[in-house]
Length: 218
Image 1 (cartoon, rainbow, N blue to C red):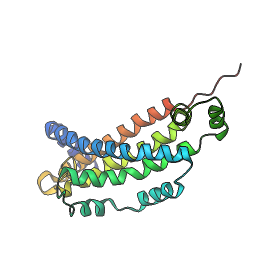
Image 2 (tube, helix red, strand yellow):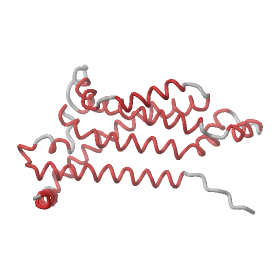
Image 3 (cartoon, rainbow, N blue to C red):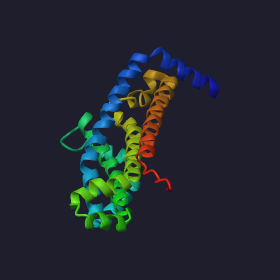
Image 4 (tube, rainbow, N blue to C red):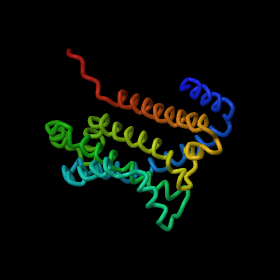
């Protein structure tokens, strides 16, 4: 029975490539827009606060809010704003969900850099901006990108329920079993899972590439 249901789901994917590609595009547009706005807000703030060694309470609070904030409630609340129902209210909700992990990891990625290295760079005459971007950020990059990876996975997965508030995307099939059947719901869910796994894989590769290489002994 379960095997037959999954076979039907794969058959639905094979029978509806145009629909799934279109909705995947809408899903990615919504997710990437929210992620881009969250990066523009949270990444510079987290990096600079980490460089200053200030804002620990903000970083910890953001982390706690990110774990406790109900996604569905936030999306529902966004429908009550002047943005109404559609793309932008869902974008705002998803942006709010993405900010905590980006901010927290950016902060702790920079704070965790060895202070002796930072002081050595300062002693060499580097400006604070140069220290941040040439010393602290390269060393803290793995943790920073890990936060982006968490946010990306969370946003792509949560964008599924945005269809309830007119966000479209693959969630449009998942929330409409009456029209697409159980095979459509599972097929669209498999597509969402594939997107999240692909995002996790790509950003894991970036983390590995960005990780500092040990200097070989002479």
